[in-house]
Amino acid sequence: MLDVKIPGHKTMNLGHLVVDYNGTIACDGRILDGVKERLETLAQLVEVHVLTADTFGSVRRELSDMPCQLAVIPVDDQAEAKRRYIRQLGVEHCVCVGNGRNDRLMLDAAALGIAVFQTEGAAVEAMLAADVAVPNILDALDLLLHPLRLAATLRS
Image 1 (cartoon, rainbow, N blue to C red):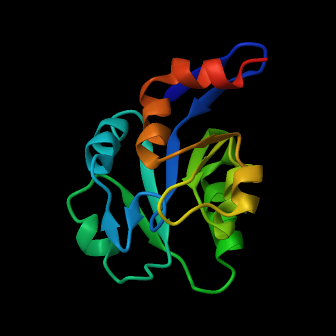
Image 2 (cartoon, rainbow, N blue to C red):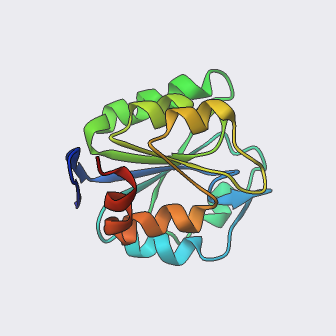
């Protein structure tokens, strides 16, 4: 469990990290450099979940040795499928990271939503639904590894 106290706001008890795959932790179907190591460290604190439609058909190979749960979602109504997934986990214990329009509902519903703006860009809806926006996935994961950064950003 990752406990994050935000002065003047709330304390978050985060037990699940839910990340989108392509555009968030991967580009063109390949895991981005530095992501694997950070996810391995975070997996000691929270359960890591990867949600994807697997556009490039590479997710199982790319994640084969990573400590995470993989959920391949249907092509249709992905935004609702992602929100439904985190509801089953308990939204109050989820931190979600994504960049796409199909991530907007989970980013909004999660205890903590982090939008990333990388090579694929980010949908405006995702950016507006998130609590925090960062330039890349490494910065997003580092917020969780160094929670005082989150406190500095979100405090009242």
